[in-house]
Length: 216
Image 1: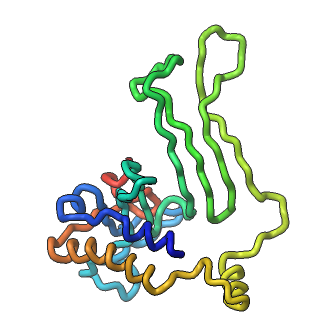
Image 2 (image 1 turned 135 degrees about the horizontal axis):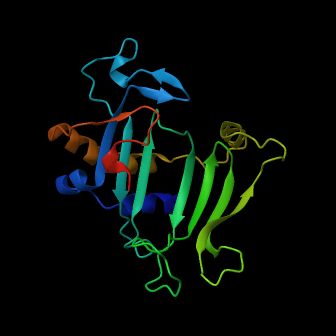
Image 3 (image 1 turned 90 degrees about the vertical axis):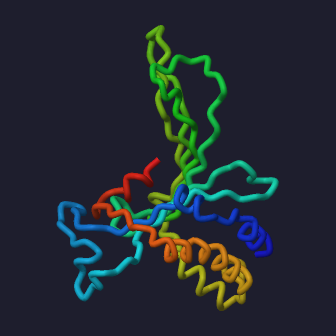
């Protein structure tokens, strides 16, 4: 818990320029999800039609410590998106020079380690591999090596674990007061800047992937 607090305190604080450049806030509008039309945030029943509340946030964050210096963290969360899941994607650095022909100006896609938390827990390693065959031409494609719990007994839900931790007085997964305060100090800087500078909301269609300027 002390280490989590250290990370929060090492988060680089945004100034107004950083917030405009590295933060995107959005609000969902009407759209279509699984073939069904859904209303926009301001069209919901009893909604405040003048509401400036965001339903989507994307951030590019830096951690100023020796371990993570220079590694960008991209955080995205939102409502009424195309899919509902929680995952961590670790994207490996590309090699400076590839001996394999790419056939594309974008080069070879980087390898990724994907840790899926919800709805089904899994760990997936996406790597580039040669397409099998007798052709003399070397063609690469992405191959997934996956570890999941499909077919196994139902695992305990997140809240079941927390309730058991409460009974056993295990505080590992709970936030300490100083951790909560450190998180709010960092977040309030962004929220206050949005309020003072009247940052406009970017609207996105329900069932999409968020505002267009947040998709990298």
